[in-house]
Image (cartoon, rainbow, N blue to C red):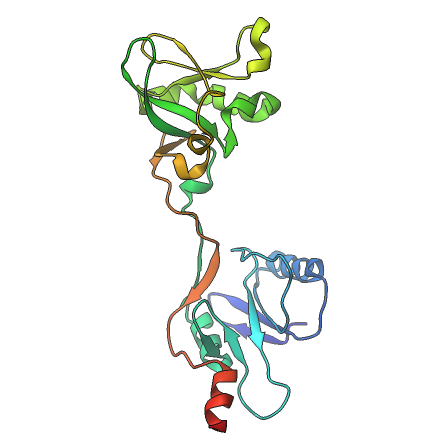
Length: 243
């Protein structure tokens, strides 16, 4: 049974205040039961969970509770703490939202850098990675490579200057996949590229396997954010009262 169950004509929300430590798996299991019952669950946890990263499917917030005094508990936010009452109001009125990578950024894609073919000297978009796996290692992932091969016609339609990844001849199998120029079919070894080119920071444009272009941005950790009535940290309140 939820600590607080809020019923609305269009939705039901269960609020759980978890102050004693339990395994994350226990929280996930109860959250799944809420989901199966058509109930949205939100967790206010009074302790840190090592290695936990904010997730859209598990609204979990860190609750700061003082062991003495009658100061209102606070929910720790990205910039400051919000009183529990204010946070609950923001949560139930849709002002708490999840911020993570754009949807396209999470879709299987080819990542490219601008280059020039060594043989025909024409501009190309050199495919250097697929689904965040360096292209030179794709031979170890048959399923991923098969999805890419099915998408090649779509990708070529979306961007005619995209190179195509193909296995090398049997005599050079140790070299891994190579990119091929879309204009003259010249093979381009990915092993000779600078390491920085193969990292997300070096990518200039990506295309999903459905042919949609997106531009990589500076990676940022997922988090829950909210705006509204914000109070200072409980500890700051106590410190100011002691001055």
